[in-house]
Amino acid sequence: MALGQPPWGLWPVALCGLALALWLIAGAPSVRAGFLRGWLAGAAGFGLAMIWIIEPFLVEPERHGWMAPFALILLPGGLALFWGLAGAFACVSARGMQARLWLAGAALLGAEMLRGWLFTGLPWAQIGHIWIDTPIMQLAALGGAYLLSALALGCGAALAGAVVLVTRHGRALPALAGAGAAAVVLGLGWGWGVARLGAPAPDDRDLRVRLVQPNATQPLKWDPEFAELFFYRHLDLSAAQAEDGRAPDLVIWSETAVPFFLERPGNALAAAADAAYPAPLILGIQRSEIGADGVRRYFNSLAVLDQSGEPVAVYDKHHLVPFGEYAPVLGRFSDRLGWGGLAAQVLAGYSAGPGPELLDLGVAGRALPLICYEAIFPRNLRGTDRPDWLLQITNDAWFGAHVGPFQHLAQARLRAVEQGLPMARAANTGVSAMIDAHGRVVASLGMNRAGVVDADLPGALPPTPYARMGDLPWYVALTLFLGLAGLRRWRMRD
Image (cartoon, rainbow, N blue to C red; front, side, top):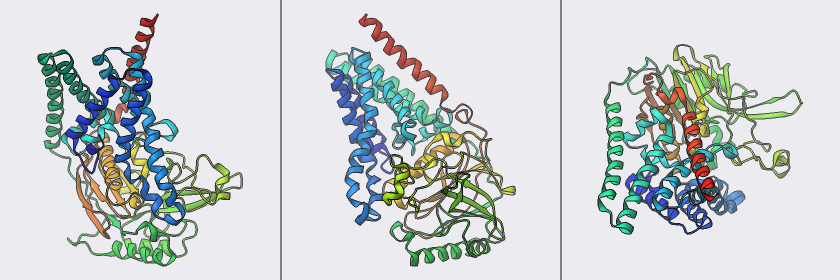
């Protein structure tokens, strides 16, 4: 199943793996066995798909390296609990193999929804992500990532059901009919995606954007000697002449691009604005403030600078990474222990901002800022008026160079499709990219390279059905379906 995820993209292999997982769950001899089989399938899939989770602990291996094996076991094992519960539910609520196959598929879809919300959520490596590099990704404009997952689960259940009909009952024709129906649905989705991609794209905006990628490796990023070097690299790249001679209208730096705080910059912000001049500059920066209770709090922020280097707008990241940017189970004891999260640069960790908000950039339009991890949650793109475009700044050096950054980029592309909006993505070590409203990368700079991406901002599409409705129809429909299935089984027992 994991091999369907980016960067591998082997979706036929993933469908076969998913069919096998559903077949094993449906054939479980007991509820306990259904839970165990669901858990084992999930743990194996997440274990490979999220192999990059060890990378943050290897940035400072002498301090955190000992935790890497535990992370590789505990995170996939924890996420797999949702799959185990889905397996147990299917075994409790249905008897026959065919009924269990489809109920297990619906329960797994519900499990994917739950893990996107509970304990702040982690919707990474969703089942539907296997379609991201195919035309089927365009269906996300209609129903989001859950529609993609539902399609994959439906195909997996149909494939497993066809095998059951042939091997257990010798019924070849019904098996062919079921598999054929799944193939037709898959073909229709593929064809609709091809047609959508082939339709005339909206015109690019008359806005040249420069994405600056300094290639600041994580072990050296905060070293005092190298931090200064990386800052001057930002200045040089921002001021460099474009290949086509056109000056940028907007310059964007990545997450936590500078080694100083917003309120204590010295003359560095003026130097940064001068390098980007005459374009305004957007950069990732840390800041702090003392609250009404007298406690100093720290924020992972984004600032918009005018041509003199004065901040004219500030956005604070509101969806923080547990154990990365704050320690949820340690609370006020984290600074005593000297650890506020792997990615936090302060012992107390970061505080959360108030929530999504738009940046009014004048002639550049209104942008919705997303800092790193926030882009993996579709709900973080709601709660404001519709923006003109999406802006993500990120530091993917934490994720290694082979798996994690490409999965993160793939999810950013999916957000663009869901909303019908282009996205400008500035990453510290890659992949910086300009993404159009169909989720296509129109310009990019790959991993571990220093340089810039100069590209016109693509145009926006009209609001998609998903942009209007979000996931609410899925929550309602699936809750009713699973609730009725459980009630039916309970009544049969009576």
